[in-house]
Length: 276
Image (cartoon, rainbow, N blue to C red):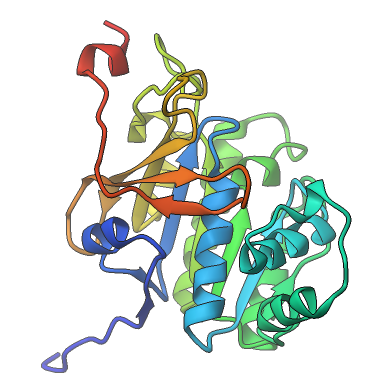
């Protein structure tokens, strides 16, 4: 009882997010939630690439909406500052170097699956990554599709059930789980138009918010001519330190596929954000 608990963590690629959350810790669920097309997967890929390039940790990636080839090329592309899915891949020295630093490093593991899957099967694969492959941080992208083809159609119950199981697995294995989830459509301004994110918009009765340690909402106005590539990362819940609010804004470069933290935060007027 008198021993100080050590929270093993890695940093995020964005300073503002680190200041709010104090990093991404093992034994915790860090959730990134947004509407469709906001850039949840891109944020997670930047996080995984950052862990690969700044630590010696092993990482896993379970992408249920894209092939393992697409995921792997996305990570390699981050190291090359290229969108490899938009151009022919040339296996030159630069590609080989990027591959060996990321996907071919021996520290990156992908699960070959697409679409919904039985929850216990998913949990077994996560447990295998942690126990057998010694993976310490895993991205699960995304929760909504895990339950999309399962059960009796009661999405709220199924999401709460899988979240309870994921929480138990994280406690058992001490893996750092980076989880992606869609949000419910809000009344008024939509998420694709820059609507503000709230915990109440998470799917399920309350399981996602209750079982997650860190909840981050991503906000981006896709239709804004000036800032359509700027995403706000808002900390909605922070069990570790209690610090919430806007952490940072990141700018997407459509030429390189990279996200860069903005030096200044541009906030929209409150009446615009809420649609008043």
